[in-house]
Image 1 (cartoon, one colour):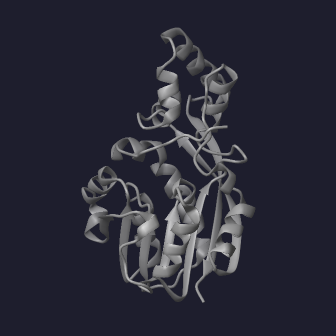
Image 2 (cartoon, rainbow, N blue to C red):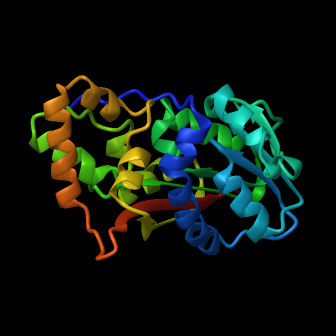
Length: 262
């Protein structure tokens, strides 16, 4: 199956799409990583800064630099209160613009699978981490079809819509993430799955959040006739777990990995 290409160019739409999920998984992830206080952090692929804000609140860091390849995401993050506590910059995970041994903790939230050259990206994260430092990240379980977008994607596919595979799907399993970290030279590599649930006010809230303009699935849906698009929407409405008050509850699984720099 061909992989999709995704460029996150709308900060507000991305926040609606993934912000609540990043915070929900991020809290569990940070407890598991158990980073030291007063550490120098690098947040790789920070997006709108949702995870950056979380680590600032939970981890008492000495400093935080957050990078993302999308200028639009960085502009959005810099407009938020979190920008007073973190240094947001445009940068590529495959060529981090920092000297060797610059950070105590290097974290990557919902990003590793999107790095085109994952071994190179992990090599860069290892390079900029100090000896004894930790590098960690988590991604959605795309291979196991346990993502926030899975219900909509499966419904669309069953109705004949061409739904492309997410980038790096094969590397989203616990086994592959651990293997990638081992191959990159990290020691004490561990991996763990986290299941989280997020709520939506109603189905329209869920639908709007899951169909941002930058999502290839949204493009596929927009290419349908109005009748077929409405049919996919109604089939999805029937598939999502709704409460008596109309609110929606959706679960997903994130696979996490961490390792140390010797």
